[in-house]
Picture 1 (spheres, rainbow, N blue to C red):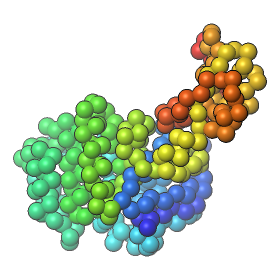
Picture 2 (picture 1 turned 90 degrees about the vertical axis):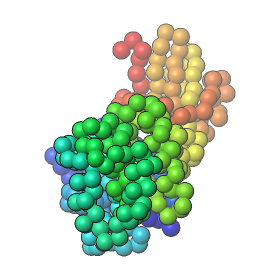
Picture 3 (picture 1 turned 90 degrees about the horizontal axis):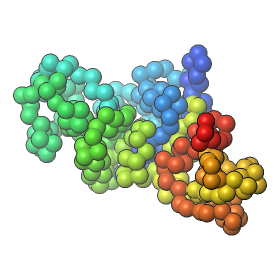
Length: 287
C-alpha cells in the first residue's frame, strides 16, 4: 500500500515551475528524493504539506486527501529538517512540553526511550547540541507522536561521516516494522546508496524517473573509450567527460551492451546524477 501518493503537482514561480510532479511512497520503505540544488525538491515537499499553495494536483496520505484532511494527516507526518529551526536557547524538555500539547496520541514512554537511545539530555539547550544530535531530537519528537511518514529534507547535510552513518542506521530501523516510511530528500547521494529502497529524481521541476534503487542503477552503465571512439558514440551518451586519453561517460544499459569495443562498468547513483546534470551533455577535462 502507498502511504503517500503525489499526482500531477504543479507550482509556478517567476523563473521556475514545478511541472506535473507525480510519485508514490510505499509503506515500510525509504524513498530517496534527489536532484541538484534548485531542482524543486524543497518546493515539492512544501507543496505536499501545503506550506505553499500548489497551483494544481493532489496528495493522498494513507488513501485520504491530505489537503482536505490536513489536521488529521499532519498528526501522522513528521518533518525533519537538516537546518534545525527550534529556539536555540530553549531546553529540550521545554520544547517537548510544548510539542506534546499538539498531539493527543503522544507516547511519553516512547519519547523517554528515544531520549535514552539517542543519548539526549533533556536539560540541555538546543545550541549545546551538535548538528547530528539536533536531528536525533527532531526524530524523537516525530516518532513520539506516531508519525507514520517521516519527511526528511537534507537531514544529514553538514554532518561528519560517522554521524551520517549512524543516522542512516536509525532510518533503516524505523521502517523495519513495515508501518513507517521515509521520504528522504538529499544531494548526498552516497547516503542513499546505503539506505534507499526507491529513488525519485527531479530535474528542473520535472520528475525524470521514480523507481526502485536497483532498477535506477541498472538502467545505465559507465563507459570509457579512446578519443577516436567518442564521435561514434556521442549520440548514445547521456553525458561524458573528454580528457587527454579519451573519454568517460554514462550510457543507457541497452546501448552499452551493443558498444562491445568500449570498457563497461556498473553505474552508481552519484555518477548517474553527475552525467545526467551536464547541461550540454558533455564536459571537457580541459574546460
